Image 1 (cartoon, one colour):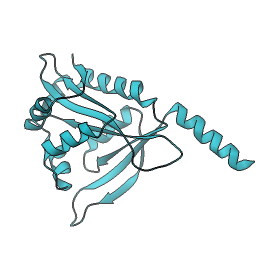
Image 2: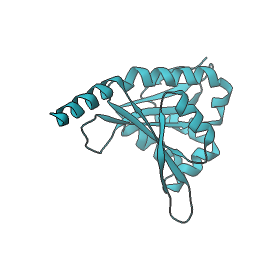
Image 3: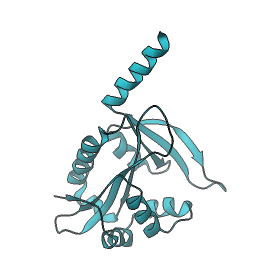
Image 4: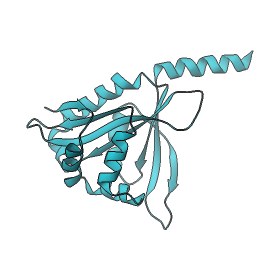
Length: 171
């Protein structure tokens, strides 16, 4: 069983980063960031951030939702997750906890999105199980590096707003 606590500390981040999954480490380093910098920057830049801890209280993941800097008619949130290799030991309760966070905090947005490493097929399955849909392959980094795929979720408030905006255009 995992627990979720708000506002992860730098110590929580260090523990997760010391055991970060290799595919996530490469993804972060692809943007020329150190994993600890990326974790702390994500926590500071988020409207909501959380630490997921295993049954013994050890941090196994960091997650959160940040407001999108892109101004659109839809309130857009960027969902992020940094996990350690320890996540696999608590996979079902971890999934349920993340799903609960998306449902609890996602309703404050019209649209949520996440960029996922194109090669991280287990991440694709995970985010689709949370209710996100594959949108498109977005880009490949320079030098033949990592490719990224965009996943998106339109929330019920987003669907209402889209319907309203489309109906205004029809008038």
